[in-house]
Image 1 (cartoon, one colour):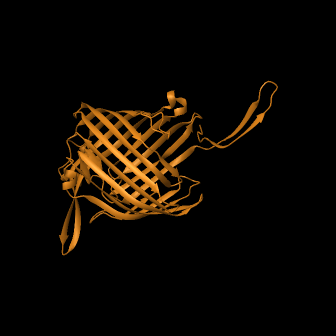
Image 2 (cartoon, rainbow, N blue to C red):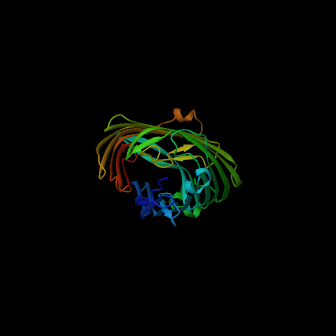
Image 3 (cartoon, helix red, strand yellow):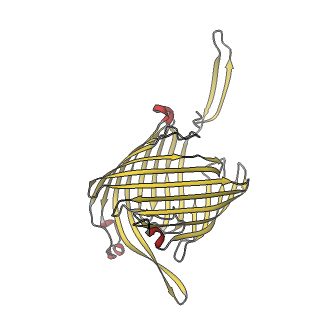
Length: 364
């Protein structure tokens, strides 16, 4: 295996009196790195991640991450430790960790009105669920997830969750809306299984291939909430047509039997330009189609320009996904990367998502 933990490796084969001897000289690479990620559109749509990671913790090829995550709805800390497949039975990977902090789950409706020929939008909160959260999780990764041929070997996950709903996390303005949930403590155990097929080959930022996956989660209600089921399906396809042109498409959908605030909540990560909570319900779908142009692709600098369509919806039934107003966006993006320093990656996105939608997003 190439574990990626050495900056340089040299070897010399020497003849010995009884057997040949291989002398190996390896130069350790610095695998400790800062985590600095910015995803910003406006005060109502942002995600900042700060932390530190080590991909060779204690020289064992294990991975350790500590990350602080800030969004408009709250802030959390994530502690994650991953054992590599080289140390596990039959090449398995094992993740353990915890996520603590506070957050809000919000359902929004964007109401568009026309005054003197000008369209205006207002976001109306239909449900606000503020809570303190504690998650403890573990997962076992697919032993053959790096293989090119398909072998049935699902990933397994287990997550214990405690959500303590607390109205004191809300501002007076939010309380005056009268749509917040009652203070209560929910506990449940999330048991998940997932499987995927296909491989997406990457040459720097360019992609070629396909990947399709399915996941099922059984949420066993232990306190405050009933048990429910969640099923997700997703697929992506990338085709490099020339050294300059690449087509990319993606489709995701899901269904849950949850009837309360644990229904799906989707945002700009699914349809660019919409607010988190604008897509909600027991079912959802999102789709993306884009043409990507690589204008420069050297080891020191790459420039990629894309033109895309992005759309989706949420509802409490699958029929409602297509009979209610669709959420959509159209736009373009410019990505600037330094391939030899993988964490130097900037993306500027300009989109139109209807009246009141976000028009700009910056990612780093």
